[in-house]
Length: 168
Image (cartoon, rainbow, N blue to C red; front, side):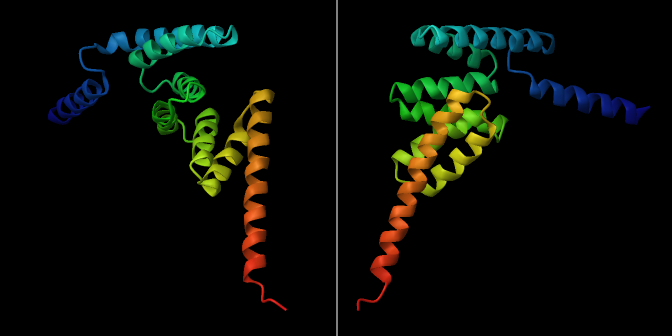
């Protein structure tokens, strides 16, 4: 009997820790559904090229559910588009924490790392992204950037090899 009470208390403690402070357990599904609804609304706004509206909805969606992978991926893409690289990186990393194979997050990080001269890391991230992206246009854009990176790495490798070869 004591063991059952102890286990019940442990489970309740764990559940209380998992709940967002100030929210009851019964409110969590509502918050997640509302977050998902806002994310879908943001997708529509993006398709209509209403990026400010999309960003507002994504911000609200993430506030309701910080682990919403799609909301964080899309926020990362919008922030990248706006040259807000710090926020783009932040949201891409959050998406990867929840889904280590998040294709859009890997795409954003790949682009950021390419810009910072981290071509090998960018290449790895973009290769993973290309494999996982379902949208043909996104896959094509990521593939083109990946080809550019591969060409840069190949050219640099050729230049290093030619400098290392003995002169005749």
